[in-house]
Image 1 (tube, one colour):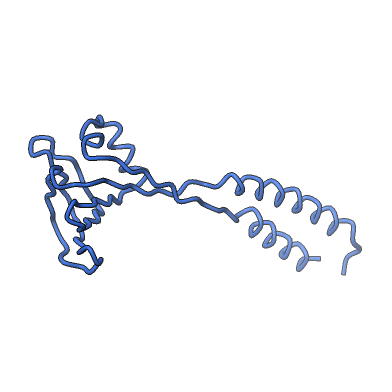
Image 2 (cartoon, one colour):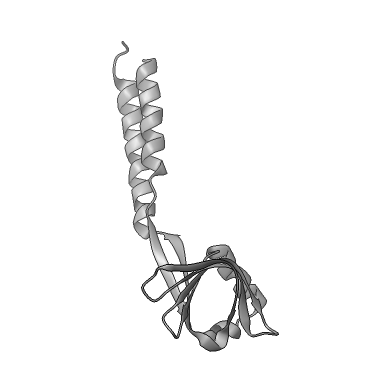
Length: 139
């Protein structure tokens, strides 16, 4: 009987713990990004600490921490600079003027609607399995 209970608990945790995510991508032009308020920028940082800055010359800055320097009209932070062929050029502190930016991209994970349905079906299945195990005679 104990083995059945342990297996049921493990199965229930496994079934309810399954979650699927969708990658949500937001693309902004430099002017739009520059006009955002501080709360809007803070929300972007919370959702996605990474920031991809695509340059007009084809280079890409991947920031893992960043902020907007309004006085310099620039993005400042810790970044990896990639060439147009995506070879690493440099890593470290970077200041990128918004004048040379083509677009700014943020990515974040959002729970999929299918994930909610899966959790509901899993919970119902767990209840059915529990009732089934309870109704079976003991070992």
